[in-house]
Amino acid sequence: MTRKTLLVTRPLPQSVLDACARSFDATFRDADRGLTEAEAAEALQSYDAILCTLGDRFTAKAFEEAGEIRCGVLANFGVGYNHIDTQAARAAGVAVSNTPDTVTDATADIGMTLLLATARRAGEGERLVRAGEWSGWAPTQMLGRHVTGKTVGIVGMGRIGQAVAKRCALGFDMQVLYHNRSPKAVPLPVMQVGDLEELMGSADFVVVTVPATPETRHLISREMIAAMKPEGVLINIARGDVVDEEALIEALEAGRIGGAGLDVYENEPQVPERLRALDNAVLLPHLGTAALEVREAMGRMALDNAIAWARGGALPQLVN
Image 1: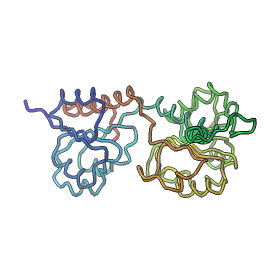
Image 2: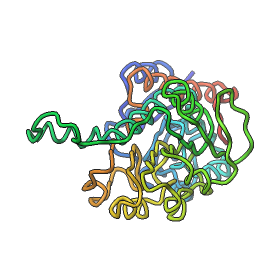
Image 3: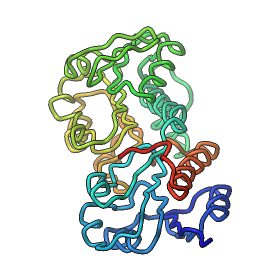
């Protein structure tokens, strides 16, 4: 029996590539950039299954340009799948899956890394030492913000939001507020706030963990940023377009908020020069899930969905 074809759009851990080769007639794309719309359209025409990821532009236009579509499943490597037009995929009969659960703790850990690094000015401090400009310890040198006992506001109380809440409440004795689109019971000492603006104005630290959807684009708007405390810190581990990046830059430049810790950006991998110039921003290159064990688990989960499709079964992590 002829094996089904699989395109893997980006280099992945070797153990994942080996598993793909065992299960499919696999083609491995050796490029650290996403598929363009034209390349995505060609892939939809040419392969039975595609293991894709962030940056691969499976837009409505790509589906339209593909014409007769051979692909039956887009097994996405990652939780977020806003690079895939799921409505167009559904209309074309293409199943879409993602990789939840595997990324929860790693992403929450990066959120805490950013929170602590921004509060304690760790990025500035490291640059100072590397530049050979540190003159020695002084009582008032690089005073940051204390974290323990402060108030954190979490926007979005899904798996990652709850993992951040657990770390903040139990690890740092923080008061945890959260805003969620619907009422949600959480088995932690936390309090739900119905109004996002109220949460933004009440928290010392705001951590954004909502999924990227058309409804959450610029959810953290100019008005929401303006509602933050003057010393407030914004942490984004969701997707870049959830935050109005231009408004955030303006607020940081003017000192209207205390700082920002970002792992994601509106137009990745482009990061605005104005943002890169700011000392009150800690910037990471989308490291949320960048641990070998996590990436291997993500790859295996994405592959399991492709295998389930190939066998005619239900996709364990179907999103459309």
